[in-house]
Image 1 (cartoon, protein in one colour):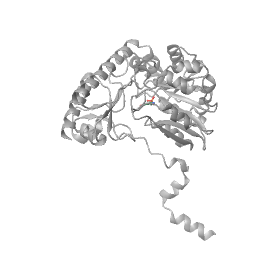
Image 2 (cartoon, rainbow, N blue to C red):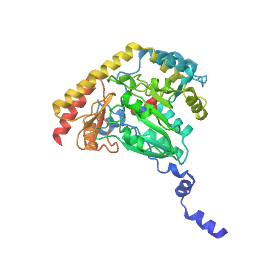
Image 3 (tube, helix red, strand yellow):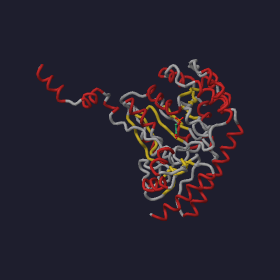
Image 4 (cartoon, rainbow, N blue to C red):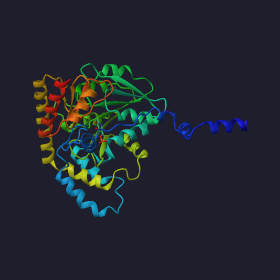
Length: 380
Ligand SMILES: Cc1ncc(COP(=O)(O)O)c(C=O)c1O
C-alpha cells in the first residue's frame, strides 16, 4: 500500500497534482475573453488612431458631475468605504422610485450575477438562459456546479418563451431574461414577459438583466418594477457601465423584493463596492443633462448605422441597445480586417459566426467604422 502511494505521487506532474485538487466543475470553465484594448491594436498594427467599438461602452466619457465627485473624494481614500452603500442605494432608490432596501449594489452587475448564483444555486439545480446571450450567467452557474440549460432564441433572435417554459423542471431555480439582449440587441416586450411570469412554479426566480434599459425606446418596454411591485419572484439587474459611462468604476445594482435582496448580503464581501465607485455613481445619477445627451448620441448613431449599412447592402439586426449585430459573412475574418483598419469590434460569439457586434460610438467613430467595413467587405 505504502509503495503504491509513493508511485502515485511521483508519477503526477506538479500541474496534474494541482489540477486534481481543484473542484471538478471549475475545470470546464472557459475564462472570459474581454474586447481588445486600443493599446494592443495600436501596437500590433503600428497604428496611431484606433477606435474601440467592442465593449458597449459609453463613447462620451463619464459625466462631468461624476468626475468632480470622484476628484473630491480622493483625499479621503485612507478610509474604508461604507460597506452598506447607504448613500448610493438611497440615490438609486430615489431615482427609480423604490425603497432603499429593495436595492443591492455590486462591483459591476457581473459581481451580482455571480452572487445570485452563489446565493441560490447548488449542484443539481438548473438555470435556464437564452442563447446566444451574456456569457456571465453561465459562469456563475458553473462555479456553483449547477446545470445550464440554454434555450435558443428564434431565428430572428427573439425570445422563445414557450420553449423556455417547456424546459422548466422541478430542478429549475433561476431563469435569465436579458433585454435588450447582449449580443443580439433584440428585446422582450412587457406583455410577453408578463405572460411568461404567469403561473411560474414557486421554486423559480426570474432575473431580468436590463443593463441597457436606459437606451430603450420601443413600444411596450419591459417594466420590471411592475413585476416587483406585484410580488413576483423577480430581480432586475442594472449597471452604471453603459448609459452612465462608468464601466471602469464597476458599479451595478439589483432591484427586487427585500426578501430576495436580503440573502444576497449573505455572500457579499464587507466592502464590495469601493468608495470612489459609490460617490461617482451617485453623482452620475443626478446628471440628467449628460444622460439626455448620451441617449441622443446613441439614437443618432443607431440611425447612422441603419442607413449606412442599408447603403452598403449589409444586413443588421434592429437593436434597442448601444450596439448592433451586423451580418458580414465570416465574422472573425471581418473582425481581424477591421482591426487592421484601426477599428475594434467584437466577433466569435457562439452560434453567431456570420456576425460582428459593433458598439455605437460618436458620429465620427461610427463613420470610421462604416468606411472601414465598406473597404473590408469589398475586398472579401
Ligand atoms: C447584458 C449585460 N449584463 C451585465 C453586464 C455587465 O455589466 P457590469 O459592467 O455592470 O458588470 C453587461 C456588460 O457588458 C451586459 O452586456
